Image (cartoon, rainbow, N blue to C red):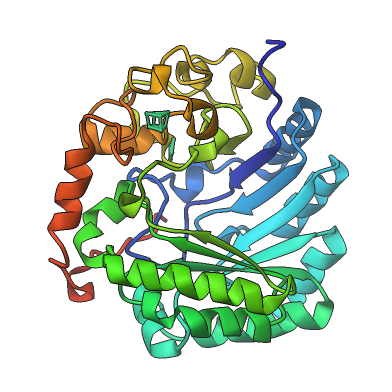
Length: 362
Ligand code: SF4
Ligand code: FES
């Protein structure tokens, strides 16, 4: 236990219910229904356990966390536990009055997702008419209150060409940071990969736009950019390494090493309603399955980059090779890299007319 670091961040998926139906939804294929969600007092205990374990930052997420009527109480409970509280929201369901209640409860930071830079595109991507205008109203309410704001921009083939305007909008809305995340392909997004995968030209152009915007902004707007990793030579350091910096709690209390971990069906995930969070983190079989380096196959085992990327993403390895312990096939050294190249070679085979939208559980 002593050589296992404490987690820094915890993502609490308060609910999987959501008014939007994005075609790249990152919630698991099997979603938790409203009746199975943990009540306020159990979440409060989980927050207190997390703080004792060493967690500093709490990300309240979903689905749409504003679908929980007790959201202000949950924020107050988390603050009482000593956690920095960030709300990740689509903005739908948040009014001026609710924002006031959240501010009074001690909310530290809001991350507002934008699906596009104009109503026609954004509402089509999110599958929610009127959503864009409501997000713009909410962003103004957040700015009026002086709450720290980050814009979450999920980009893909349909909206990547609007990146310059997206960065301008983040500035205009008073955001301190923009997280530009190209869709990563697990779970539901895999169903729509052919219609979401940007072209190499789009990705190269996006990189140049981000570099120019960073130089131009002089630190006033922090720009994070996650490119689509199929085009990369080496994989991302997913979760900073399995079981090393963060953990996720599903709405029913299932504790997961990452948001897509339930695709690893050979692992058994424990529930915080039955087992203490510290036991799950330090001693849980799922958390120890891919911790450290011992599990790694070659070429990772003898690769100097293993300390940087931890062999890449376990969920992507499983999705593309059928083996969660394989080297992430995005890696140029992986014996399975040809699988990623074949997906890229398929090119633009789908359109947004083919998208399968995500439907919310009740
Ligand atoms: Fe990372 Fe493994 Fe590739 Fe080395 S071989 S770069 S450790 S994924
Ligand atoms: Fe699960 Fe990368 S998303 S390890």
